[in-house]
Length: 126
Image 1 (cartoon, helix red, strand yellow):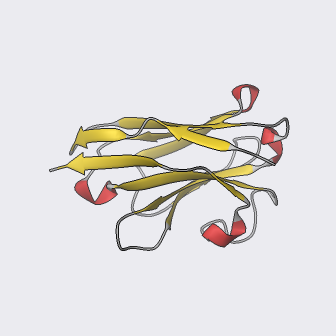
Image 2 (cartoon, helix red, strand yellow):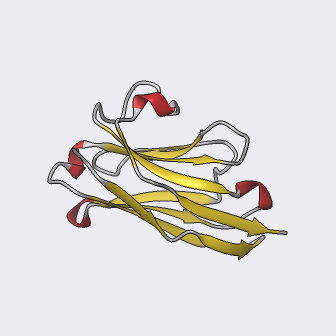
Image 3 (cartoon, helix red, strand yellow):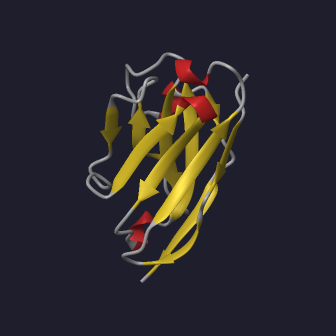
């Protein structure tokens, strides 16, 4: 079992920045690819970014490419999402997720991930 706890969400003005963190329990954190997803009211959960087990490979949604950066610290069992140049359309609940199968397959599909956090709200005002 893996427990994931997100933090770092909040209210920010357009153009601002936030850094989300996701702390994982368990000894096998470095065996999982880690992803970030988001869900706005009335919309489906959508892929944001994913990072490989060793942190060397990343993939981003087109909507956040160049503005968001995913990283991880395996020594601290933590994955991060640095969000810059935030836009009102980035407003959503952000979730981190762990993928047992590693960095492969359909990384953008929520169903590919095995464990989920409870989410943290990000609100960007215009």
